[in-house]
Amino acid sequence: SRTLLAAYGLQAASQKSTVLGKFARHTLTMPLVVETSGSTADRLKTPQDASTAPDAWNEQAIGSAGVDKNDSFKEDEKWLPPDMEATTPMLLRHQEKVRHQRFSRKKTLDFLERVLQLRMREGDNVLSRPYLETMMEVLNQELGEEGSCFGINIPASVRRYAAEPDFLSFLLLLRGHVSDLVVRDNRTLCPEILRIFRTYFESDGSTRVSKEKFFKALREVLPHKEKEHCQELVTYFPPGGPTTLVNYEWLLLDDPYVLSPIVYALRLQHLEESLSLSERMEKMVRSCVKEGGLVKLENMEAACKDDSVLAFLQPEDFARAFQTQLEDLAPGVEQKSSELADLLKNCGIFHELYFPALPEDDGALGESMEDTTGEIQDVAM
Image (cartoon, rainbow, N blue to C red; front, side, top):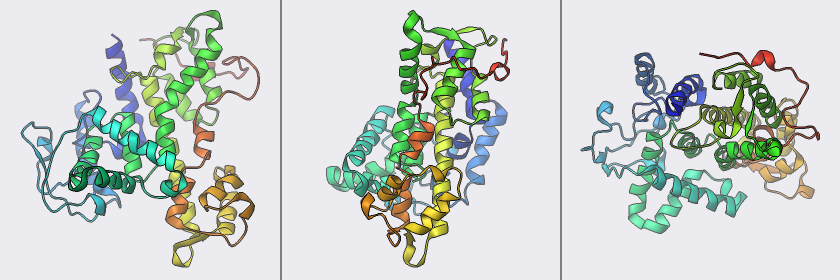
């Protein structure tokens, strides 16, 4: 029954997610649950609808030279066809067919996580460059000529499992849409919420709270979450009214085998929020670019002050993005636009706005006076 309830919730969450609809509605992507005929038709249309996008290489089958995409999961398909499309990154283009190695989830994630940890350890000198560049450098150092084949197979594997949050986050990272920090936060988002809930709710030795208390607590640890997203989460709760007791530990368990709809929706929403802010930053950087592809500090600061969200950026964030010491931060400092955008996307504003944190006041979690009863609809079946 848990699997059946999860399937209904996952299907609803996947259909509502804009980031999943844009980046994972693809014939090569394995769905988490069987979809209706209508949604399947939409999936088949998506690659064609997105084929003119600037980064359409991930909206199409990798190396799609006349290959029947409906046959992509046949066991006898052992090759990835040549791919020299202009929309494919130079590092992934290949004139010859490449053996399809069909990496497992574990092998794919283990490798991607290892590269991520390497970049986080190395710091801003590496984080200012695309993740894909670092990945290919690591492969070339470790595997030599075989590194290219392995590297081409990684995006193919990520694409196959992109309906799952772990792989969707790395897909966005490989494409340069989000930063390493966002991927790390997305993977630890629900364990952190669960840790906070355990700290505050287990004083009575129980993991059961009312739906209303759960919802209020979630609003408190994620205060910047939009009301529309909060209301959407209510539909994934078990049946019953606001006073119905639920086990918050079960709802927040990030189980890869039976994924909780609450966990799935929270992680997809986090990617949507982070992607929106990343695109906002990129647009702001482009508006400040001068001759030579450089951006001046004073122009960037002035533009961010007029933005309701980017105004949250602190002097320390600008010092990091412009790769200078805080005391040396002054008008006239310049940075390449590409490096500036990548470093801004690794600043703490993403963590501050979208990662769970304890409320600043000392009140009990979930005991705020805010009336959320109207938002918690009775979804009894």
